[in-house]
Image (tube, rainbow, N blue to C red):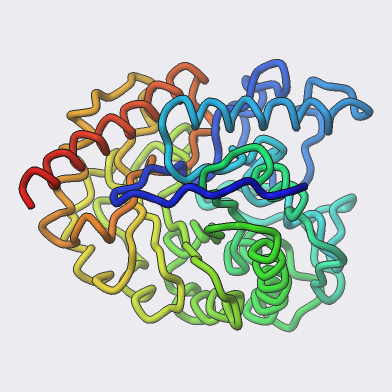
Length: 352
């Protein structure tokens, strides 16, 4: 597909963290919300027969793109419409894992979950999401971002029956992610985001080897990269800690942007001083409540960060993925983000 001309980003750009609400005609949203995010394939969630599924996913992806454009977002994603979860789409496409005879691992909530079973060396046999990125790139003239699950998180969402330890497994995943990220930039991505929520959930292991795996995934990468750290989907993980257990450690990573959530947790933004050299993707949309915030409420949440970082180092975003929100709520919350950005840009320009 041929890339369309790009539009430069304004300051205080708006963007999703990754996922958008999938249509109920495409996926059984009640079943999706009634279970933990799948780590192996969950083909039973799709409402469309297999022969027509790819075409239906393309159509739904175009709806997600148009919804972001109508809402006024500046940096677009594909909404992760083709995915059953943020991680299993990529993790189950790798060689070295048995997804037909899964293993078991504890989810971040402490519940056992079926997961890919590592039976050999992790290897990426072919690009997994390049076609998704090319489709997104060809269907908008705005800058685009695509997300990839992180090597540490995938190592925690697997049963290791091959490597001597999980650190070795994480480094195997890192090589696969590194190859994917490079291919995504070559295909036209403006930003590639690596999702590493388990760094927050398992900070000791993240310090021991997770950060090294993330850095290995970024080795030799040229392009704007981000990492997303969160407390879990609000629809599934209801209790939020008051602060991050793993965040300052990212200051030394080569990643340029760090995505954090602040709205639902009421996070003390003093933590931003640890990330003074990074652009922060600031989560300011509460995903635990479908009620749509006003633009002024969202702007107030962003203003809290100005004490610690200049507007030029901030991106306005939801706390996490919008996957579990009703579609009308997700659309309204995106409009609130754009409205907040317009308010703040006008204030800042007036004050300069």
